[in-house]
Amino acid sequence: MAMVAGNGISRSMDSSFSPTPADPAPRPTRPAGSAGRDLALAVGAGVLTVFIGARFNLGERLLHGLSGAEFLQLDEWPLAMLVTVIALLWFVVRRARMTVYALAVAEAGEHALAAALADNRRLGREYLRVQENERRQVARDLHDELGQYLTAVKLAAIALRTSAEGRPAREADAIESIVRNTDHVTSVVSAMIRRLRPVALDALGLAAALEYCLAEWRARLPSLELQMDCVGDLEGFDEDLNLTIYRLVQESLTNVMKHARARRVSVSVARDGGIVRVRVLNDGVTAPPVPLPAGFGLNGMRERAATLGGTFHAGPEPEGGYRVEASLPIKPTPETV
Image 1 (tube, rainbow, N blue to C red):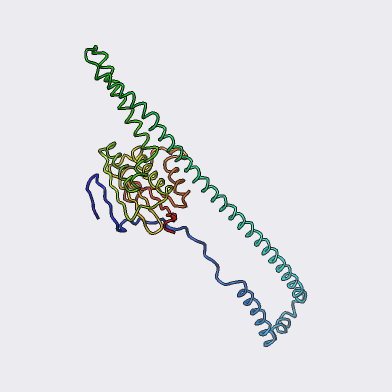
Image 2 (image 1 turned 45 degrees about the vertical axis):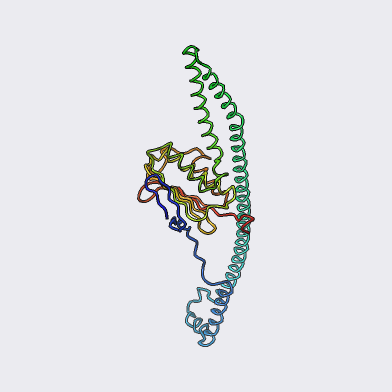
């Protein structure tokens, strides 16, 4: 593994990155036994009672012992108990039918909920696809239209500056101001284009695009120590997965800048079989001071992970700091199928 201290980048091909998975939800304990076994036990208990009663004449002995309690009308009790047993059997049958009906309704509800969840995920993927297409189009328009006109303005200003000999100082200063302002607007537009559509992601691949993204953040925040660790082969992913990983890291760093007041940030992207695990850990405050608007920040990252069938977790670390972590499934590409 090659490590660069301070604000460097570390890349490795081992499996040192292994985030602790969240504890699974407890599952209810299934009662032991089955319907056939329970029925056999009930019939066996009845047969055993008849056998013991016939062997020891328990019925006659019971009647003889209670012969002095005629006022209790004990001879009517067997008929009453028989009616009670039949009524209980009727009650059990009706409850069983109601239970079967309730289970069928619950199962239908689960199927409907699963279908709705699948529809929501498809809508989410379509929304992200449309969003990225719009960003790509806006970035292309900024580059092709506004960028060309800014270049033309700058060239015209440079031409005026070249022929400015003998002009008043006020005109020369105005021309120089046009050149400086044009350079500033060009740099702002270039930064907007990179935020809208990571050009390095298309040209160089995921790992290089992430390294370039962190390099920009280091230039923007020189006091922040940024480290990156790439584990495994991060090439060959489809566009949706590449963009999701890049946006997760980008949005996590944005949240760190806005809310965390951190001094050190560690970014890890690891391929573990058919899963890509993304983790961004900072040593700042444990939570944003104000709730983030719905659809942005943590909510937006959670939605991105869910649309790909992945999981997302964000929360404070026991030893301090804040962690954002996502596990995303790798969709097989035609070359790997």
